[in-house]
Image (cartoon, rainbow, N blue to C red):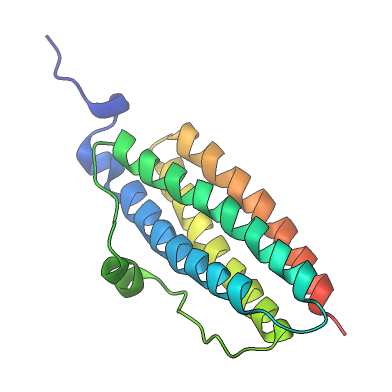
Length: 158
C-alpha cells in the first residue's frame, strides 16, 4: 500500500506554503489587535463612522485568521499561536493609542500594503506545488484588501 501523504503533498512540499501562511497569520494577528485598539480609541468628528469601520475590519480579519490557521493545520502543521511569536514574526507593528483619526487610517492603509505583500508570497508558494485551495483562499483576501485599501485611501485623501 502506498504511504499516505497529507492532501497529496509531502511535508517538504508544503514547507514554503506553511511558512508563508504563518507569516501572513502573524501579520493578521498584529493588524487585528491594532484594529481593536483603534476601534476603542478613535475620537473626533468621524468617531461613529470609523468606530464602525474598524469593527467591520477586525471582524473580517478575525475570520481570516481562523481560515489561515486552519489551512496550516490541513497540511498537518501547527500555526504560530502566541503573541510573542506573532510580534517576533510580523512586519506590522503595534501602534499608539494616541493617534488622530487620520493617523489611524494611514496606519491601516500601510498595514494593508504589508498584508498584500505577504498574500502575494503565499500565493506564489502555493502555485509552486499546484495548491489551488490555498491560492483561491488568499486570492479572495487580496481582492477584499485591495478594495478596502482604496476605500480608506479615499477617506483620508485631502
